[in-house]
Length: 110
Image 1: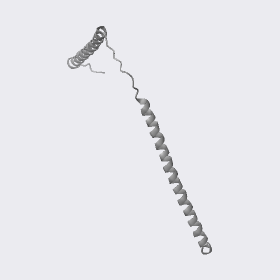
Image 2: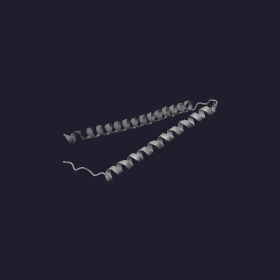
Image 3: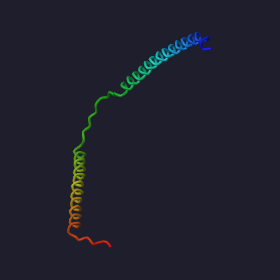
Image 4: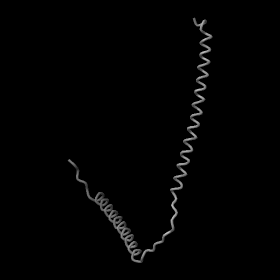
């Protein structure tokens, strides 16, 4: 039976192979076309985003008064003094804890 239908099977196989190769070529062409469309879309989006990301305005200058500058300086001084005070308090507590641990005897549990 195979011998009788071998020619028909080979012809059908060649036709199927040709159809599959044509289909694959069509898919590749469609993929390349889609890739170009996507690339163009994102290029336009980036171009539009770049146009809208830079805003040109006239520069404005402000001058702070001496009172505002002094208030900012006082505020920074307060923060610095608070930091120094907390650091000193932490060091003092650390020394006290070390003294207590070293010189006071521990009571045995039990």
